[in-house]
Structures are given as structure tokens and as C-alpha cells.
Length: 354
Image 1: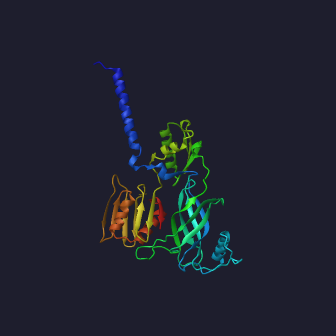
Image 2: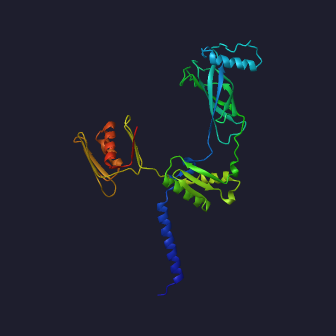
Image 3: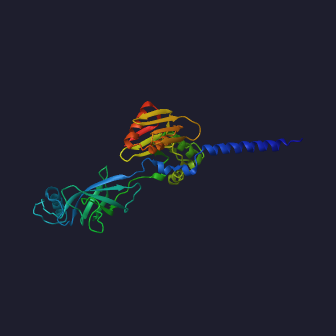
């Protein structure tokens, strides 16, 4: 029998490649299960900045501050700047005005002329800010520089019947502040940047760095620790870091987490991850008896409520919880059982009780 060695070798190589690709496909996470980089990490330096200022709300219907010390002095200085002669009396009394603190968040890369929402909160004994108008209020950042100026009518969330659904001493002004100063940032010219994971994990960090390198076709990303990935801007992306980040932030990463159980004792809610396991153990709690046995394949459980007995084969905590619920176990009993399992080392997960 004649054998074409070249054709045989070619088929052999193709078969090996097919097997390798199939195995690799089984090991890699499915795209539907992956989270985007932009959803699990942020770029260092790209963040909001808090702005704060002191102002006065006017136009209130007798619900302003009763004390004249702070609000009166503020009104006196305001009248002086407006050219009104108050004859040296800066202690002006008015129940139609209230002293407030104004806060806002300055988004990254915001530019002069952009508008911000602001929150206005009373700091005196004003009964309500309803119907009030915030007068010009400079907003400063931590460096004491003014980045925005706020002014406008206050909304406190009144509903149709005239009642309020929140505190009348706190209100908002939509688009109530105008940015007056840019934050210096030449982001597109950066040579490198750092990604910080929202939930640090060594496996996720290493996996993300490997996926970024695969996407960019070189060793450009390195995992610095469990929560930090450093990225060097490739030569073909120099001066165009924005496009590079747009490409990186849409990479899908299979996020890994520690096995954990969260138990809310008040509501009886139990939340657990897929990796939570339990070692074979026997449990006796009051009249309740449970035996967990190791087994092959899918865990199977059975319970008899009248005798309050349960037997679970396997190592899945979900089967244990199902059996406990079948037996009508109370939330306080669940807490005691999981605490004891954790203490004896049978629960292979972190336990958090709310």
C-alpha cells in the first residue's frame, strides 16, 4: 500500500491543531460570561473631583434661618458688594433667606462651559428650602481654586399632592453650575498608564494582563499586583492613547473571585458563588440532623420534614441550603449552622453575616 508521507503529515498536523484549538476553547471563558475591562477597572487619574461652596438661598416663604448671625452677615457682605449702603449693619435679619452648603462632582476631562448638577443643603435652622433661589456661589476643589459657579432655583422633589418625598432642607439644581476652569490634562500624550481593579484578585489581574497583551500583539501590559495592571503605550499608538484605551476597555475578562457566602439574618437571604464547597460533615442542631456525604457527579439531596432529617450526597452548599429550606430552618438557625461549619473547617468559603 502506497502512502503519501506529505499528505499523511499534513493531516496529522491538522488533527493536532484541531485537538489543541478544541481544548483551548474549553479552557477559555465564554464571551457571554466575560466582563468588560471598563466595568471592572478604572484608569488611574481618570476620576471625579469633589467641589464645595458656601452660599445663601433667598426667596423663601418665611422658612429661612431664624438666627441672624451667619445668614445676616452673608447678606450684609453681599449688599455691600452690590453697592447698597447698609450703614455698617451687617447683621441683617430675614426669615426668607437661609445659609447653605453647595456640593457638586466635577467629572474627568470636563471643560469650561459644561454644566453640572449641584446639591444644596441647609446648615442653619431653616425649615424648608422649597421655592428658594440659590444666588451666585463659587465652588472650590481641594486645591482651593474655583472651578465652577452655581446659581438657580432649588427643587426639593415635591409630588403632585404638594407633599415632599425627601427632606425639605436638601434640594438639587439640575445644570445649576457652570464650569469656569479646565483641569490640565494631556491624556492623549501619555506614554503609559495604570489600570486599577475595583475588586483586587491575583487571578483576574494576571488574566487581564495576558488578554491585553494578546489583543495588542506584544508584551505591553504587566500585572503589578492583585489590583494593578501597568500598560505601556505601543509605538503605533503614541499620541493616541484615547484610541488605545477604547480598544482595551472593551476586552472581555472572566472575573475570578474568592468563594464567599453572604447571609442576611433579618431577611433569611443567602447569596453564594459557584465555587462554594463543603466538606463531608455531620450536623446536629436542636431536633435537626443533617449528614453531608461526598459523592461523584451531581449532588442529590432528600429531606423528610416530619422527622427533620436530611441527607445530601456531594459537596455543594446549594444542596445543603435547599435541604435546610425544605425542613423550614429559620434564618437564625442558618446563621448558627454556617458559623459552626466555618469554625470546624468544613465550609470552604468566606462567610459574611449581615
